[in-house]
Image (tube, rainbow, N blue to C red; front, side, top):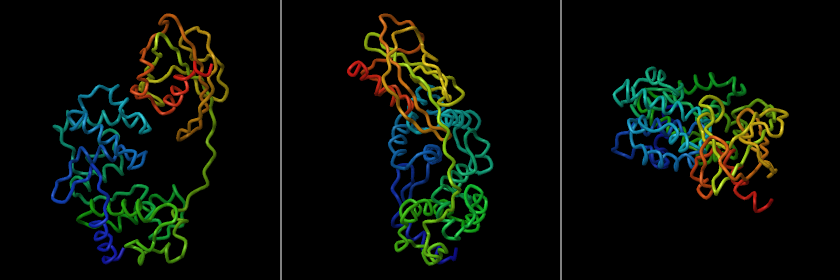
Amino acid sequence: MPVDASNALLRWYAVDKRRLPWRAEAGERPVPYRIWLSEIMLQQTTVAHARRYFEAFTQRWPSVEALAGADDGEVMSAWAGLGYYARARNLLACARTVAAAHGGHFPSEEAELRKLPGIGRYTAAAVAAIAFGRRAVVVDSNVERVVARLFAVAEPLPGARETIYALADSLTPRTGSGDFAQAMMDLGSAICTPRAPDCGRCPLASACRARAQGAPEIYPVKQPRKERPRRRGFAYWLEHDGHVLLVRRPARGLLGGMLALPSGRWDEAPERGDGAPAPADWREAGAIDHVFTHFALELSLLCASVGERRADGTWWPIERIGEAGLPTVFAKAAARGAAWKDVA
């Protein structure tokens, strides 16, 4: 990128950058804990969605030491809705490593950051650059799109990622790489959007090869998506005296460590009753659809009411089911279960 284009980008960023709760304002020092926490949250969701989670987390656990001392179940429940619960487990593992092995201070070097649980190339670079001012190459999906268009990278993703990383490396300045990275992110979010990029407002328009070709929206080139396999399963809403049975899922595996409705296997042809927590007069209450990264799920809900608590788990007040921190798929099922008597 020509120096004048880079300067134009930073001038644009100085005026139009997003005001985000984890970003330091002018004259403030970035807080590594807040930068790290926001980057972990943003790996699988939007800024708008992550913002309220970030504010709730930092009010409840304002420092890495506070998070390190938190109860696992409380953190998992607070994470519900942010996706990929393995990241929540790594979040706790990382916080505890920083507190125990680093005196509560995040390492400032990218290589040392990558040794921490749950921190890969992107997150290590983002924390090193934004929190500590280190020269690091930060490539998220927004930066990936901007770079692919600037250079009109014809190779499709995901194979093009190393090429795009190398090109981003060639653009990243020796100093101020944190502001540069955030400027590129904001550019991708506000102007160089996936559809209908606003090239007329872009500070890099004069340097963009995709714009010169007249079709910036075709970049980055992507391989055709494979159809997700479909699975089916059963979940169980078991009521007693205004309470519903919840269970803690195994620590490892999909939705590990989360409170959930009891359920059986999720596969191509599960049997009705698989995973039922107790013998009961189970009645069908419909099904919900949910899409995970690698498969689509049709989850049928069976409901029953019992006169005594015949199963182990947590009996949660139905009127407070929204406070249980259920993963999205089970929150959908619970919404149906809470009304099943009204439609039975």
